[in-house]
Image 1 (cartoon, rainbow, N blue to C red):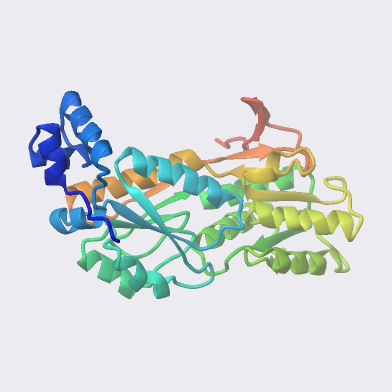
Image 2 (tube, rainbow, N blue to C red):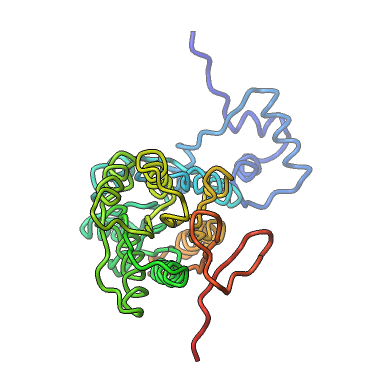
Length: 353
């Protein structure tokens, strides 16, 4: 036999308060006296009352749900992103609803499913929507924030690290370490993140007269990265420095270099990654990596989302958060300047006046 659902009116009657007081008690951010809240919660426990979030959505036209589309979770970066993002949204009375998108193309196929949940906002992590669906979100008043990606759409916000500067600093660091044969392992070729990291890396090398570098496509996939690394190291003139566009690709390159080609890291080849997450600082890997400023980026993404929801307008803001190059044992040390900052060695090229 199905048990009848307890109503807010019954809770109000038992607690001796108004029905609106019950509603405010269960509305994040609403004003309600502490004594009133205690009465409502006590009555709700006694009666077994649970508020109906979907019914409240129909009344307020707000679901207090943020749809999050994430392209892949094998990158060690994204479990950390999810944890920090969920905490940041919950502090503001919102919940996160996770969908799986695509890393190598637009995530349009999941769009209709997302919108069925009447989400208040959409955050895309390392994936994108087509211009047409971005327009549809704008028309529906649903703000879109890109995380770790940029977009040319005029009414989508984005938060990224300074990928171009990071790639350029890695080039400067490797050149300063005495390397002259360079390779780049690309992530998702269509992504703005990959394009900017590669462009910065190539620009940094061109400053030293190096225009030709080896190239492999890792596609943010371990198997593809291993194949690319094998091709690079099996060539007649293999690179002595490899920049991989993410840490999990860099670790795959390191595995192939050490265990299939017997190369010493960093004596024979230096390997640098990007993100500085997961196993990068484990002694077994000691991966030199450009640090993705994760907490500031998540904070900025949540702030942008809340600004748009609360103002009921779709805006366009693009925030770039600077990172730093964390120097460890997988790359040769240049003569300088390397500084100890909170127990981590940090390298930055000298400024030229």
